[in-house]
Image (cartoon, rainbow, N blue to C red):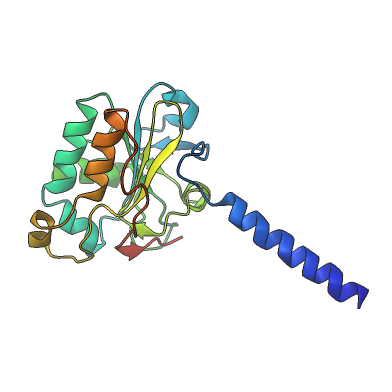
Length: 199
């Protein structure tokens, strides 16, 4: 009986720990230290005083392809022009869909006309799991104080059809604009959609 109680307590502790680990809007964003496609190391603390966008991506995912017909690139250009740091995050594990090396990453950025500040690699999935990133795309906005202000979908229509972008509510774009204006996004959390991240 005592052993069962100990097991129950241990399970409860693990469950509570997993809840505590989930990111919360309005709280400090999880710290990270990762390398980009040029081999440069980036940590969240490096961007203190700047707004930061995290975009989980997988070039083979049809939902990502949908937004890389011009929508994602325009968002990247618009926001980085306003001194926002945009990090495209690849959490696909080696050997799984979406995993690329540094050269392929640079090729994709160039061929698609993408304009992130950097493409970063999270091969062990530590960063993705810290953010509870589930899909590609999955979008996050962190304010100048390092506080997570938005997490969720890029928009309101969970499809892989390019034409749906025009009629969808642009949750992420609206959230980014709100943060840049010093306001709280509404909604601050939305349901992400896309391909599951291949941890």
